[in-house]
Every structure is written in structure tokens, then in C-alpha cells.
Image 1 (cartoon, helix red, strand yellow):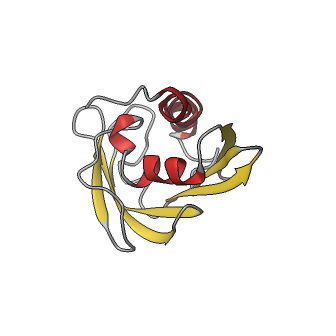
Image 2 (tube, rainbow, N blue to C red):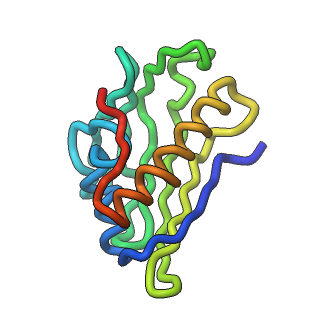
Length: 147
């Protein structure tokens, strides 16, 4: 099955988009314990109640690519079979120059329609990427998770 992928255009520079992911994730996604500044950096993200994920930077190519591997997952939801469902998956952000702005391609490698959280996670990513991140980049105001 194919991984969740979405792409969108923003009028901001590649640098601005890259920094929004590496250093400003709490402004558009969810609270994060630390920025992602170098390979092997680790940060914990919080979600509703006791749910969380811990990510490790696998790859950073400044202004072009970010890969964050989920090394620990504890997701509690009626839409999740296994609290560790995200473990071993990778969040991949690609940035390229396009039409006086930036094309952003996001792929959640390992998140596919054959796992139970697909509908919930797809809906969440659609909100956080196409809504919150895009809004944060273009008007400076995202709609992040507040837990």
C-alpha cells in the first residue's frame, strides 16, 4: 500500500518553510520538547491525554529535506489498534523552489490505508499540513494541537 503523501505551495522561501518544521513545530502541529537541528537530535511530541511520539532526526539537508523517524510511540485512541503503530515510520518533508515560493511535499512513510489509524491520521495530517502549517507560513498563525 502507498504511504500518506500531500504537497502544497506556499509563497514563503525554502528557508522559512524549513525553519517552520525544524524549529517552530509547536506553532502549527503539537508541543515539541526540542527543535530538530542536527542528525540524531531527539524530541518528544505530545498529543491528547497520555499519547505521545518521540522522533529522531534521520536526515537533514538544510532548506531541502528533513526526515524524522518515530523511535517511540504511545498513541491511545479507539482508532488505533496498537499504541506503537507509528514506531519505525518516518516523517519526510521535502522543499523545492517553485513560482517565487516553495513547494512542500510531505510523506509519512509507513502510514498507509492498511493500518487502523489511517482515517484518523490522514484527517489529522490534512488539517495540520494543508491548514495549520500553510496558514502559519503565510499569515503567521497556525492551528496547532494544544496538549
